[in-house]
Length: 353
Image 1 (tube, rainbow, N blue to C red):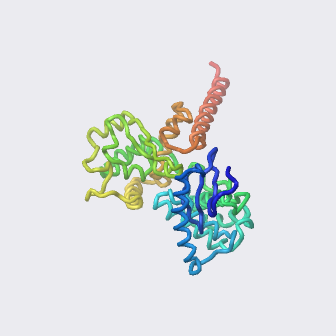
Image 2 (cartoon, rainbow, N blue to C red):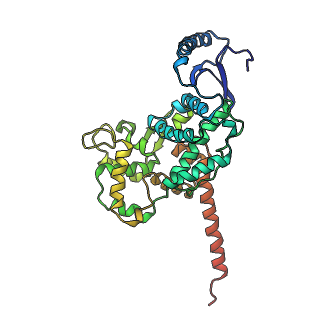
Image 3 (cartoon, rainbow, N blue to C red):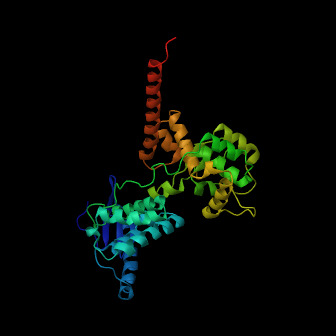
């Protein structure tokens, strides 16, 4: 790693690679990795012009205390790990970070302890355990970047147990799937249901899925959440299971997207979620704890129990790492072993004739 870097140039190490940025007041300008190349110097010169213009304005800009949680949040919001998120995710994360800033913003980031985060989480849990768990995950991301930027040496939000069950999005039992499919849902709801159930796509990806992305055998997709987080623009192929292929032969719709409003426009996630929730709430108590995202959980669970490996699950579900896939395969293996154990007990205790 070069020791004498130009002013404002910082190095962030990710995995086995060094990433170079010009950084000022929380804003980042990516630079080529070869610090001696003409491309690096051209990119740096362009960044310096913008930085120098910003410096001239700083006297009128609000300042945060150096090393404070406020300052860390401001830098995180300008970091590539945040700016690469979708607009919706940025808004969601922004609300969580605003809450952190309101509670702990003036304090030194190094002074924040695990207990501080847990106490705030417990207060937020009054709005729901899932909301509290989401807040912790966002705060953990912010402090993780804070570690890279030198604000803290230890992430106080790391490895805090979830309040909600690890399977907050419960898989849909067979009875629920049968009832939903027999309930004559509107065509757009049924199409979204089938697409998510048989591809494991998240709702946002289902709602943006173009019909041209389907070749009759499978789908070419970008997993919006994981791909943006990883800075990965590669496409992924998901084969269509037989029930989905048969369904789409007669129910593919006629818009640019598979799932559209009556006027042909794209649904927002909130609007679609409200419609879907209204429909399943009318189907009875069985659906009270079920969510659209649970369809993804349903198929991930079924794949694991069918013997899919962690890498096979990752290829279908689009997770950035194997950790979540291994959660499903471990659970499937535990279930298999438990069933085998009880069968052995049943054989041993079988009544004699």
